[in-house]
Image 1 (cartoon, rainbow, N blue to C red):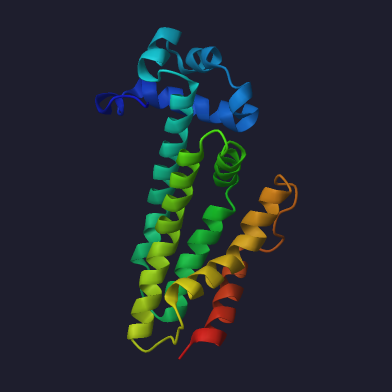
Image 2 (image 1 turned 60 degrees about the vertical axis):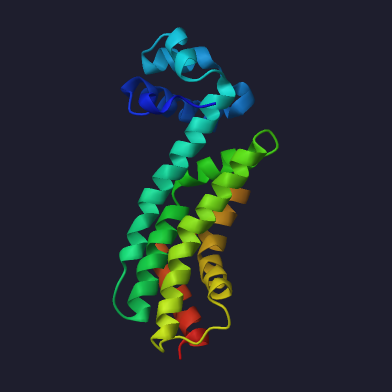
Length: 204
């Protein structure tokens, strides 16, 4: 159970979640201890437990806050305008920059690692990510098809193909290798290549 609604804006809670996030990322769930988090956040252990009844509640707050932050960061893609190429490039460049971010990858890696322990939380996290990222793209693709710019079999399939061209080099490879292998090309170049490939297949 996370903190009561009236405690959400408490700066002490913000400090606790921020410190906990770093501990969970670097030490994992099992290795993380509550007392150092309280000390580094500048609050008493009693205050920590008043806001989060246990480590599981604190972990849930960390993941939920990260998901909310991801939503804000990706919300800009809904404002992309212009030609199909400009709209798709705006989305994919933002998406590539987001998915290649080391912190974003660390959170995803953490959720994947702890999925068996927090299955419902992990499923909710991934469902939210799918809706936040894929949802605006599917809407845009449907609009472009309605305008006669694209010819699609199904917008969700096309969106998955387009996002996959970004995810493989900038997200999955670094995730699998623990960040040791990263894309050699700039994210803007990867996004531009993906848009060209996509439009060669689906442009009306």
